[in-house]
Image 1 (cartoon, rainbow, N blue to C red):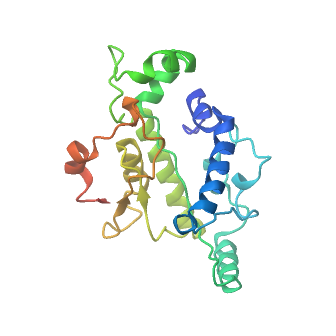
Image 2 (cartoon, one colour):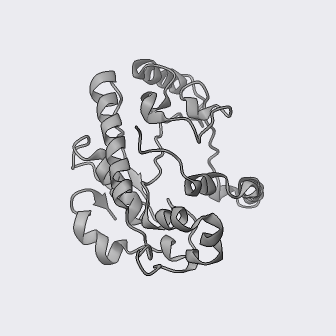
Length: 232
């Protein structure tokens, strides 16, 4: 049975603020007009490659680990179609195959599961411990979170070795340690160590006062894995 089953916390993170995306799009549109030099790129998802891009897909019940990462085509077909799209693209267009990965369960997620989402927002989100668990600042992966990342590793290993999946040419990761460790456990042994992930400051969730969102990367985490996997 897959360990990568969405929880109440996962659903809240993805859908808890339905107005946020609309507000973001409106703000982006305004800034694109007032500051065109700062917003030169527009991004769109090309349908027909992965199940996840279909709005009808129920992300709470869909298990990408049991369905070849959700691809609708063989990797050979995906790579060929991607090449064809770029060959016929306008000068100001390009097509990329991008894999976005959520981190495994962190201790802050465990606290949400333990007390419920309402109690999280009423009390626990501004704290860093509950007397038993330390979950901030910069919550680490739980044992479940580590095993979730290892399950991702097994799926990717099979897709690469048995189905011809491409290994990403570049890796970018959030400075939060739960994301960085998810990357390490997922790609250990699948990617040459010479191609280190680039830690990108703004490639992360909302930056705010909550301890779970505060980073400790430069202080502690850097000494452990940066020499192996990360470039800061």
